[in-house]
Image (cartoon, rainbow, N blue to C red; front, side):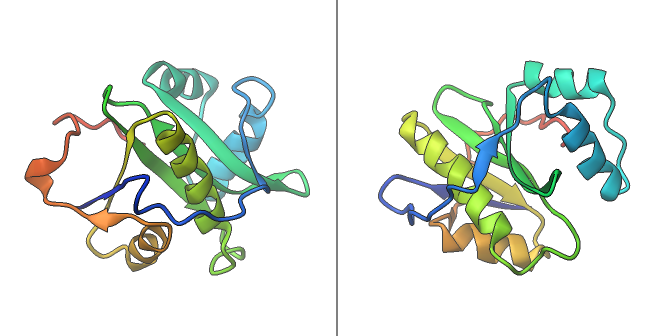
Length: 152
């Protein structure tokens, strides 16, 4: 795994007006359909559990579908994670993930927290996208994440 962090100093602002917060009740069906498109089930109890674990989801919605989403995971008082980044097949390499990541990163930084992100070593697209909005690779021992990271 690769751990990244972004500070207010490193953040690269981006027009992310197309991104919005997903409502826990009104947007559940949109989220469920996106997860299903990724061959993952999302039950309402699991959706609510994510909220209870400190997740808040944002997305870009077009034509009644979530095209791309990312979550903020409030895992500590000092740092919040950009998590659960998903972009639909057919919409990749068009800047959707970059906009939604910038949207949630701006929110994290505006609340005075360090923005963090964790991805697989081989996830070249996520690494490039995160770096493009200001994330830098950090040493794992300096990372403040809890040892047990819930599945996303």
